Amino acid sequence: MASTSFPIFDVTPAPPDPRLRDSHGRAITDLRVSVTDRCNYRCVYCRTGNDGAQYTELPIADYARIIRVFVSLGIEKVRLTGGEPLLRKGLADLVEEISSLDPKLDIALTTNGHLLEDLAVPLKRAGLNRITVSMDAVDPEIFARITRVPGSYERVLRGVRAAQAAGLGPIKINAVLLRGFNDDQVEAFARFSREENVIVRFIEYMPLEESSADQNARPWTPEIVVPMDEIIARLEQFRPLVALPQNHTSETARRFTFDDGLGEIGIIAPVSRPFCGHCSRVRLTSDGKVRTCLFSQTDHDLLGLMRRGASDADMAAWIRAVVMHKEARHHIGEPGFLKPSRSMVHIGG
Ligand code: SAM
View: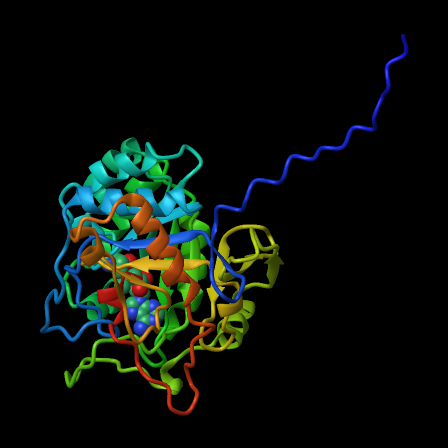
């Protein structure tokens, strides 16, 4: 008997997109977690030089739980930062816990590199995928003038090489240029990228510094920012640049190599070319507050909710509601701009 055949359509509804979304339609896939408010450097454009940590830190198990809840909401990349994250006891345990959540999760760390020489291998073994080292000069004297720690350049360089040897590459080096202070380092950084096989990324200075009356401080002004176009012009004088394609749409850096394909440079220009429209980030401070923008005027007390006995599902619902109110963009350079309620080192960069 002939059977009746029906055209086959797949009527299974598409699974709902589990990713966090804000009210501007942006998917939030990138979580930055500060694991300590302490830092062993006192960089002149970041900290006053006198003040220490201002906020507490949570037990490692609390960060692990919060990160687990975020990952259940579609977070794809977790970056550990601080303060200085390598000062934090139990960091490798946290990395191990995070890496056990989902093998596809991208786990990265931003560090000043001072303690990296000894920690690169344990962190790699724990499951860390990638590392970014902040270096604002490749000249030992200028470097120490910025960090206010003698001998810091040599230590960080050993840390970068140890991370490279441990397989934490491609290593990214983040440099914040300040006019009249380290902006003569552009060509030297280009050479550094080529010789050390690292990606050097220049980041425009943002108004996120601690306020200070210190004479060494470099408070933010529009004039001190070295904008992207100027960095590109200086690099072009060194060697012709060739633009590289974006890795993904929310990538913050414009990428370049040189005409011979050696070296990679990224330029992150939040001041002269804001990229808020593609922002995929949410942040957790060391004391358990959620921040939806670097320039937020408030933060949201996730730790308080946890301490009141919230379940993971309660926390997830709360996070969804908070992220919904993520700011559309920052207002750097506009009349009436207000500095955020915390400076960079106390947020987690
Ligand atoms: N201690 C770690 C480090 O040095 O990488 C992590 C924290 S640090 C605050 C993170 C990054 O923020 C560093 O690369 C630093 O250069 C950058 N940063 C600090 N203040 C900044 C500012 N006002 N504008 C742009 N970047 C800033």
